[in-house]
Amino acid sequence: MMYAYIDGDDIGLKIENSFMENDEVRLKHVNELVKETVNKITYELESNNYIIIFGGADGIICKKEKIEVQELLFYLRGITKELTFSIGVGMCLRDAFLALRYAKSSGKDIGAIYQEEFTLFK
Image 1 (spheres, rainbow, N blue to C red):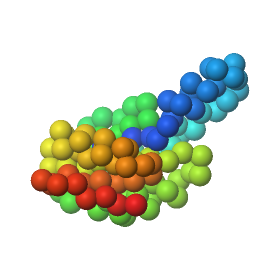
Image 2 (image 1 turned 180 degrees about the vertical axis):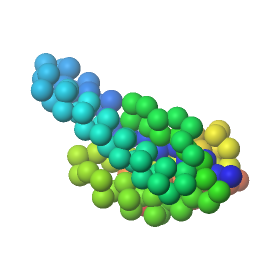
Image 3 (image 1 turned 135 degrees about the vertical axis):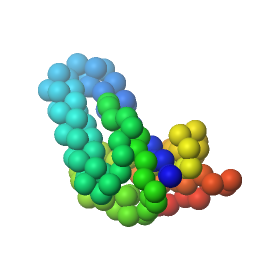
Image 4 (image 1 turned 90 degrees about the horizontal axis):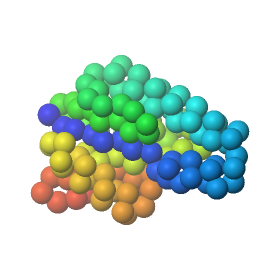
């Protein structure tokens, strides 16, 4: 079984900026966009036989027998132009988390697999 951790890129910064700009309208928009996008992603994953372990805020953790990172990245990139997501994949939750951290430290809108070493997908 493989695990994937999908997490929004810089969404916290968008929220922080809304506070700093005192922009209630933008804050509400970011909130609605993130909720809508995560719901779409979750629905698509479930439709493709992924088992959802966690879904909330701007992240989803799921598992499936075989996860195609490049295919998943392609799907995520087509959902919205306002948000990007990075993906970490591993054979256990910890490895998926490590792969996500590696992906995010290597840029944004990137996928990574950790299986004894890291492999990046851009």
